[in-house]
Amino acid sequence: MRLVLYMHLSSVHTTLHLTQKVTVNSLRAAREFSSRMSNLLKIDIFPYSVFYIFFEQYLNIWTVALTNLAIALGAIFVVCLLITSSAWSSAIIVLVLVMILADLMGVMVVLGIQLNAVSVVNLIMSIGIAVEFCVHISHAFLMSNGNREQRARKALETMGASVFSGITLTKLVGVMVLCFARSEIFVVYYFQMYLALVIIGFLHLGRFLTCHTKFIWASTNTRHRGGASFFFRIFNAMV
Image 1: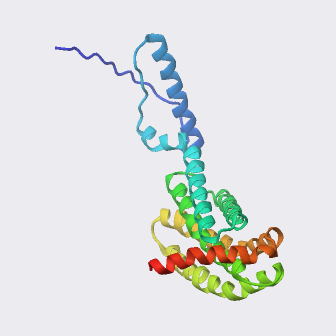
Image 2 (image 1 turned 120 degrees about the vertical axis):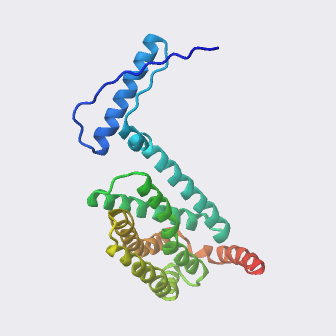
Image 3 (image 1 turned 30 degrees about the horizontal axis):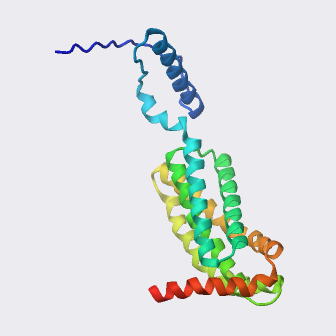
């Protein structure tokens, strides 16, 4: 028969304001103190409190957020490269997505939306939604003929209205419904964040076309158009 020894030692924090910074610092201080006592007494010591369960996620929330965002952006670059056969176009799509994410995080700071598990999921999902504002214009630009300005004009004429009506307006109507939700979590983390995403994504269309006209050569039209049509023929054959 093995005897298990344990001891429970009670302690209290000073008066805490339940904000993200204060609670994270208190949790880190408790863990640092427990680690020093464990090394001194040569026994396992760990701190526990009720609010530790809810605020432990904030200890590495930035690492988790940046890692998952980088993975999502890398996957989008690979898929766009396979479909468009254009490294420049794929890189610019990723660049615009990074700008949209930066603007969205800026809106979160202005609106006072904290970075937590819910907002991180929304940021990752926003990458997939923001791709729709870029990839259709990019494909139309690569498929057009003429110089860079003519191709940008044709891309905006052929796909601009579709992106505005089929993506911007439909998402805008769907998001506006969340404004009347009774739960604050739906209003803050879904209505405000997704409304900002739709507006920011649409406003970046002009910047996206500007990047194309500056960094993509007119001589790449035939080469990329053939490569893109190859992958689209495979897709159409599968469907």
